[in-house]
Length: 302
Image (cartoon, rainbow, N blue to C red; front, side):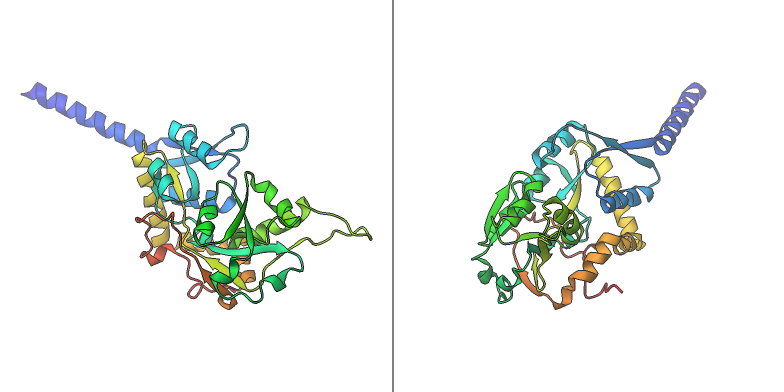
């Protein structure tokens, strides 16, 4: 009897030691080094910092341009531990989503990058039907391409994002819809990428942000992990919810220089909003959880 009790005690101690070792061990999260968006990494680090166990990001570089399908395969195979993308039904079937919008829904606020001096094309537009004579540029693999087409809009595609601004410059389409925070951030780079000099040697301004319209649809970007790693998915969700509940996630979001500047410059309240529906949106999307989504009416910036 005493021997059995001793064996049981030893096994219990070993179990506690094993759990403690797991909780104190630093777990590495392998991330594609080309996905270097500062806010997303900061958001992930914040979520992981809220947990009892320690995680650290480890950059992994893969040769070549990674399309979404290739990213999905590499996450499923375990080369990367995490990936982020706007969600679709198909993507949620392939990988495990953490259904908390990283950008708090800001990906669904789309403003237009247009060629300089073409604002008048858009001044008389108030309804979706009035958009249907225009052409819009998108990347071939972006979910937005299918969303725009499902709403009756004409879309010109490129297999590579880098080609979109040169295509806009030469008139292959009339406007390039981008996320609110993306458009303002990309504009200086885009000007430099397609730059040309005037007769006086000055750089010509090629693009501008359309001044009065906003396309809006529900289009959350999530973190995704392999379905073989359900505990990791639970940890990310737990960390993100802890950060949202204590307000640190909202503070990180609104203090990010790119996001803050984009919200202020875009003047959302004074834009005409054109609502689109998203046929790719999974039914599990947490639309009713108001704390997860940015509300420009309640979160005014100064």
